[in-house]
Image (cartoon, rainbow, N blue to C red; front, side, top):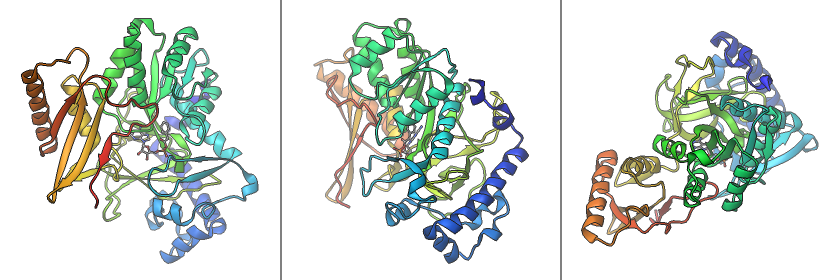
Length: 433
Ligand code: DLL
C-alpha cells in the first residue's frame, strides 16, 4: 500500500521535480516528433525541433494542442505507438461534436492507475478499506480509473458503476464500504436517498468520498460531508490525459496536487495564449511527459483555475490547482457578463437550498434572459404564495450580488428536477447564436 504514497517523488524538492520533468519532456518531444506526423507538422510550422527543447523552461516554444486538433486527427492521427501495442480505448461523452477517443498501452494504463491509487491513498485509503466505485464503467474513464487505483491500493473494490441507487446504498451498508467514488452530483443524490431511508451520518460506514468529473462548489462539499459524515475529496482529470488522477486532493483540501512526475501544468490567458505567472486565473494547459499511445503536449484543457506552489502541510510538494470553476466553454455569457453555473450553486447552497437546480438561458427581443429553477426542500415546501415570493426575491438578490445581473428565480416542488447518476446537466441554453 505504501507504494502509493511516494514521498521521494511526491515530496521532492522543486529542483528534483523539474529535473524529472525535463528529462521526460526531452525524450517525449523527440518520440512524438519522430512518431506523430500531425504534431511534427505543428512543430515545423512553429519552427521548433526537438533540439530546441532541453528542459521545462523551453516548454513555451512548443505549439499547443487543442480539442480542434483532436477532431482533425480523429481517430488515429495522434497515435504515438502502433495500434498493435495499444490495449484499450476510453472515450468522452461527446455532447458536442465528435467524441474524443483516447488510446492506452499497457504502460499507460499502469501509469493512470498509479495516479488514481495516489488519490485514494491521499484520501486515507489503505488495503483495509472497502472502496465502492459508483462512477460509470465503460467508455467513461471514471469507473475504470478508480477501479484500477483501488486494486493497486489493495482495497476491496466494489464495482457498482452508477445507477440503481437503492442497491448502491444496500452495498454500502452490507459490505461496510468506507470509501465512495462517484460524481459529486451523484453523491448528493445518494445522500438525499439515504436521508429518505432514515439513515443519518452515523448509520453509514463511509469515511471518505472521492468526487470529481464535474465542477462542484465548496458549499456542496460541506453539504455532502454533513449528510454522509465523511470527508469529501476532489479529484480531477480528463480523458485526453488518461482520465481521473491528473490531480487529487490531500487531507488539507486546499487545491488538488498535480501528479507532476507525469504532468507539467501551465496557466495561460485563454484569449492570447500567453503563459501567466503563478497564482493567476486562466486556462490550464497540461503536458503529459510519459504517456505513450496518446501523447498530449501542451494540451489546452479549457478548464479555468489557478496554480499554487505554496507549501502544503501534508508534505507533498506537487503543485496544487484550484477547483476548476468550470470549463471556459461552460461559461455562459449573459448580457455580456461571464457566469459560471458553480457561482449560482454557491448562492443556492448558502441560502439552504439543495444543489438541485436548472439554468435556462434564452434570448427574447435581443436580450438574454436567465431563469434559474430551484428545488425547495420538503421542509420549505409551502402553498403560501407570499412566503414563496419572499424566498424568490432573496435568491434573486443573492444572484445579483454574486453575478452582477438579475436572474428570474422559480422555486419548484421537491423532487421535480431530474437527479443525475453521472455528470449533471444543469444548463439549457436556448439561444440560437
Ligand atoms: O471526467 C475524468 C474524471 C473521472 C475525473 C472521474 C474525475 C473523476 P472527461 O469526461 O473527459 O473526464 O471530462 C473532463 O471534466 O476537462 C473538466 O471540465 C471536468 N472535470 C473533471 N474533474 C473535475 C473536477 C473525466 N474535479 C472534464 N472539478 C474536465 C471540476 C472537473 N471539473
